[in-house]
Image (cartoon, rainbow, N blue to C red; front, side, top):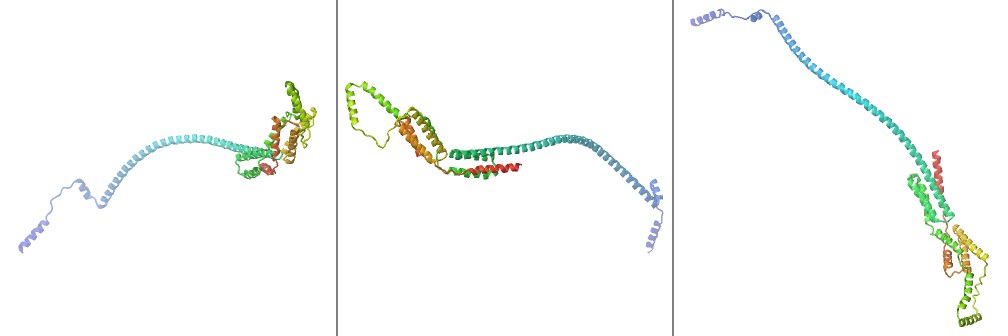
Length: 358
């Protein structure tokens, strides 16, 4: 127990002993003399200074960056100004070209309108001219049909009129073309009578009439030849011929149904030929007017006169008789249809167009 007590006492004595002196630096001594408020202020000042320095450094960096950006922007601005000037110049140039194009477009539009107007006028005039031609062709067709009875010529004229309308290529002309085609179908349905061929045969006969040999001239020639032949024969041949002629006079054979041909004077011969020509001309007129009765009467009369007064055994006399026989066998009677509907339709169409144009 005493040992323990002595150890505790020795420990207490050791604890109450003073520590050895410690040597402090000036900053530590200065800090040790500062209180808490001063230390806080110092810390705040240090923090403020540090923030100020850091902010200044950041500001300098930002200034440098801003200066660099400004320099770049200045370069870009100059380039932009250059581009802007170039763009403005280009815009002015394009504006000038656009103005020229607009003026040219306006001129083109004016020319187009003028051309359209001119085309419409020309087209209208062309249509009127074609319709006038069609009307004239249909008028010719009617004249050929009614006056000359020439179906082929009338049909040809109507076909040409239809071709004129077809080349116009107008839908409004469809009804007009149908009327013309209906009239053409009427003409196509007619029997084929070649009036032109019949008329040509009549024309070929008229000049032949002046050259036909008279039958009385042929007989007179035969009688005048007989004495010359007798002189050339021998005497006994002449004697035998005279005996034979006497024998022939004993027996006479005559055709009682045929009248004796009268002898014609030169003036009568002239009038005979002229009357025969008039008969042929009358037959032509009957042909053109489709008067078959008069046509056959004139042809039959001319045929009888040719056989009675002219030599028809050979040459032009035989040709004339043959032609007259063919003409007498020809039929010229045709019931011609009325094709005036085409002409009236064209005239009505032209009148309606003129009213619209006014």
